[in-house]
Length: 213
Image 1 (cartoon, rainbow, N blue to C red):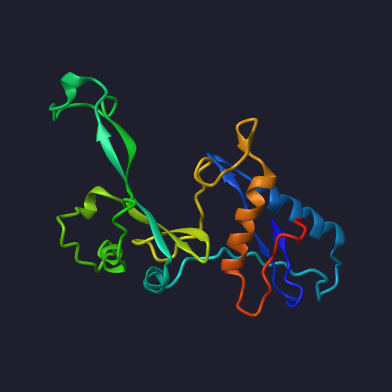
Image 2: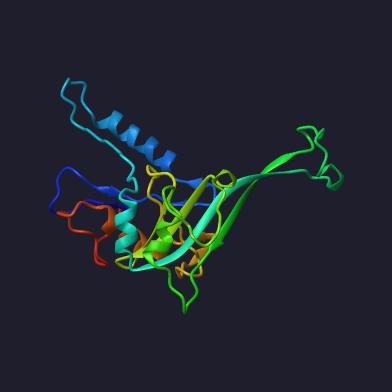
């Protein structure tokens, strides 16, 4: 989704889709390069200037405090496994016997027990989780999904400069599927929500009547 606010002349927003391992960023960059090469002049002062910067999640504390609701915490890490059971306790097992796999643990609040901001903040690097022990060496990242102004936002609690992502669930987000992929029509409302979050305060966000390029 591309959107240029009507009252902002030098900034626009693009929301890119990635489904499983397939994304569109490379295709987009390639088309922009071709367009600029075809339409830009050879003069020192270029006709076209295009800078694309990712939106990074900032102010995790502020987002946690101002959240309308908390959806999930996802713990991500890796684990070394041995494919053959008899090798499990063998310190002499070769690299061929071992394999590293990704692992994910996810927790969600129950319908009658919503999380408080202090509970969520306790999972940050400087937090104090009083309910037990969490070994940071077993995980690479902890991601929080929260709801803010009707939009779900996912960001890392451990990596401050993570690019903003919103993870959609086909069932929870009522996505229509076609050929195994979410349709553009069902993704458009979610893209508008993300655009409204990342646009500067002075910009008008897209509404349902705005066309998507």
